[in-house]
Image 1 (cartoon, rainbow, N blue to C red):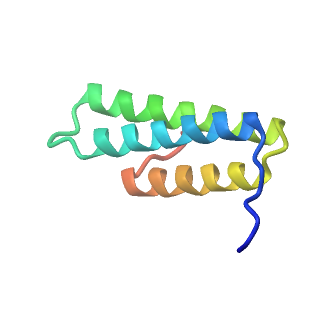
Image 2 (image 1 turned 30 degrees about the vertical axis):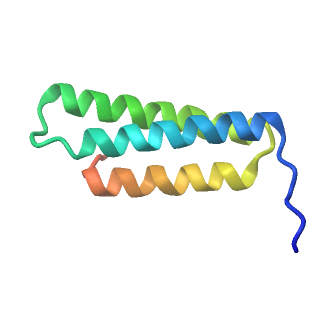
Image 3 (image 1 turned 120 degrees about the horizontal axis):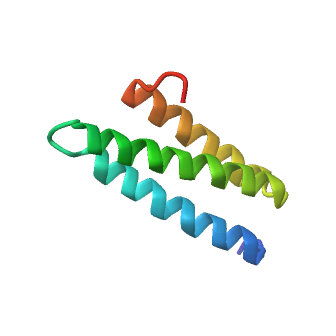
Length: 84
């Protein structure tokens, strides 16, 4: 059996927030109409993910930060968000 890597409390905290924001973003994206309030919620979620990205980098959690960055880039491409 492979040893499980022990994660820091900061990593676990950031990962929990990342998963929460990710699921919320997906829920908002499945809305039937993209009205202005839905667009604002999506941009708020992406902004929160950007903050998590920088927090992960600041705490030395490079792999988590890369995962967050990849998700942000895919979300921006999917929602056709430019300049955010």
